[in-house]
Length: 244
Image (tube, rainbow, N blue to C red; front, side, top):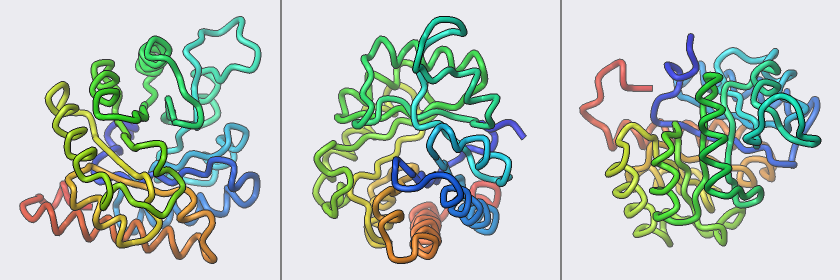
């Protein structure tokens, strides 16, 4: 199935960053794959670039994303992450402009265009509603907006940044209602997940909240389950096809 047909709200993003790699990344991916199948929820899983192939081989339901992709074509570009290379490794998408790997608007535009040429999904990060609106003009599949000072903290945007999230949704939908708007800063608990979905986003996620937990797989399962429940509660008119 085309990856765009598998991407639907609600989406949960599991960001490995540099917390896990190698066999541990594959172990977590297998668990996430099972959860995605059992709950029928779209899960974006972004391992280290060198682990993409191993994760893709061992999973069937995850949307495997590269943690970064450069707007380069085959040829020159030492150290660049090439779109063709991540696609061949098994990635179906790429993260762009994370606060820990910032890009210029020009490079984001070019990278989204390169991804579109190759059928690669894009999830573009933004640190303000205004930046979210700017990148929405490029036609990404997902815009994930979060204030950098809340990332990897226990201060949830769901409680501290209600206006930020609601303004982002309003601005992005005004440009392209087909773009999924997500936010995940400070999500550390199932309560944070539920509160975030309650603000109207099309998805959320967690990195440190899962990877630093005593039992990352149990936390992963709890958070994705909480998102599913919150989604069904806030979308009571969803048809059977819309429901996870």
